[in-house]
Amino acid sequence: MPKQKKQPRDHQKMQQQLASSKETCWERWSEATIKEAFTFAEGYKEFLNKAKTEREGVEEGIKVAEDNGFVDVEKKKEIKPGDKIYFSHRGKSLIFARVGEKGLEKGTKMVMSHIDSPHLDLKVSPLYEEENIAFLKTHYYGGIKKYQWPTIALSLHGKVYLKDGKEVDINIGEKEGDPVFMITDLLPHLDRAGGPGSTISSREVEGEHLNMVAGSIPVKLNKKEKMEERVKLAILEYLYDHYGMVEEDLSSAELQAVPSEKPRDLGFDRSMMSAYGHDDRICCYSSLQALLHSKEAERTQICIWVDREEIGSEGSTSAQSIFIERFLSLLNEKMTGQRSSISDIYKVFSQSTGISADVTGALDPDYKDVHEPRNAPRMHYGIAVEKYTGAKGKLATSEASGEFLRDLRNVFGKDKNILYQLGGGLGKIDQGGGGTIAKFMANRDIDIVDMGTPLFNMHAPLEIASKGDLYSAYLGYRRFLEE
Ligand code: MN
Ligand code: MN
Image (cartoon, rainbow, N blue to C red; front, side, top):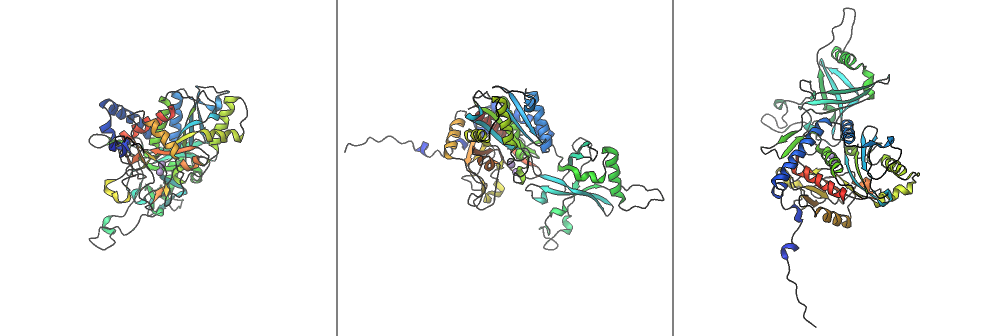
């Protein structure tokens, strides 16, 4: 047998595991790129400050879209390549699209994120008085650690739908000089499980303890009137005078308590941001900016903001809702001048590729034991690409295909400024887990993968994100939409 000539082996290349994630954004980028990332973060913080609820996020999204030439799809008779449109659904979810040269049957590029964040909803009957103090009862929305919500300043946002048809907007606690609300907590002196000297709290914060202090001055009654709960009455008087509402109107309200703290830079070097609602408005913002600044592509580029992700994507405004199908058929009809059948829409999905743009937990040096360091995303190393999420034996997750991940590696490989980290699963196996909207889109037969910024203290009232990861996400989504 002829001797085969051995090729010299490049051992370094063979062992180049997840090459993309070997350095942080700060090490990889030029001074100019770092400056761009910092400037980008300024726009993001402004957006976050205006979008503290899903409704406010959608209102802000529409404003940005209209400023950039996007038109309400309902107002367009026919739609041509190059047109920019948006579709607002029940004021809580929003789709943006730039129409490509190719028909929808050739597939689309979708980046999908969720505009809702964990918060406290007021209960249907929230107002009560006890010990001469008025309180508002809340019901938490999404996965929170309840102990994190007492003793922080909360603002109240939302809408009240009065019986006479009027809509009232409420926003208290954001402006300088506004009052705020607060949930109380027990003083440490009276909260010792192991007796005096113990530092362990004796009780958990329970859901029914998440009641916000809301007032204490009782109404003055004239001599003939006899009424109980005069502090509660005084609050009702305030609500009537300022908003024209009565107690029963609270039952047809959508009022949320959220942290009143503004987004701020974090760290001496300002490389990070502390804010409420990074999950998932950081991906909403970066994906919309990616759409606004990307080059036109042959296929239609779509950016979707859905609601209700934090409670499992249930409901008419969630990723499971058929409003996404309704939008695509509307778009298809206006592009082709013909009615769309359901099989047309199935075809669109099967030919489309998507990114489920959502945040994930970054490896926290103080809690290393819950992470699996070989697969965990790290802060400042760029967007985390997660092949799958879920829990235990990959329960309740979709999984991105190998082919799709290969294509993504090739796309991102073209720009050295796009830092990305490949991994999968949130935390160690059987440690816990979590889900995203990816599986609901994958069930529609889209090739999709989870991809977003890693955070510290995800789901806490204030979360931490890296300006570098934010900018990396923007660059990555933009490249994906352009290819
Ligand atoms: Mn999320
Ligand atoms: Mn979340």
